[in-house]
Image 1 (cartoon, rainbow, N blue to C red):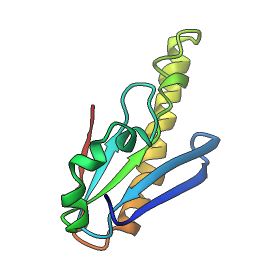
Image 2: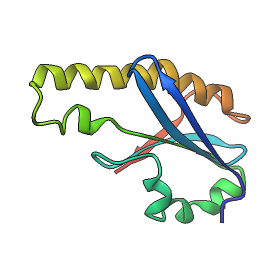
Image 3: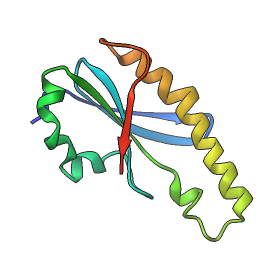
Image 4: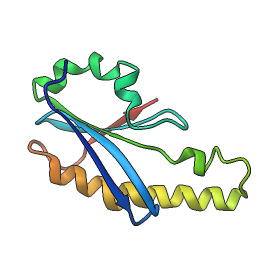
Length: 120
């Protein structure tokens, strides 16, 4: 069981919609976890991946940030023109770099700078 889990939701100006994420842990090297294609921020927990690294989280070795995707609006939206799908993915890139990364840097109580990313 993970001792500290925080849920966050905000309106993304880059995506023009609400986005959700979770933060696991209180201290440690930041780890940004992406969901599977079309997945969401909570699959890290739903698929028991959080349990697999719980000891690292609880010991303060890592602090995990799980984000939502917009794959169903970009690459998996086969009813949309490929240029529109690419533009939506670029919106998501801006969301990550301009919103999520600064959020992570604000929330890290431990080592700052480069962080680990992961997911499927």
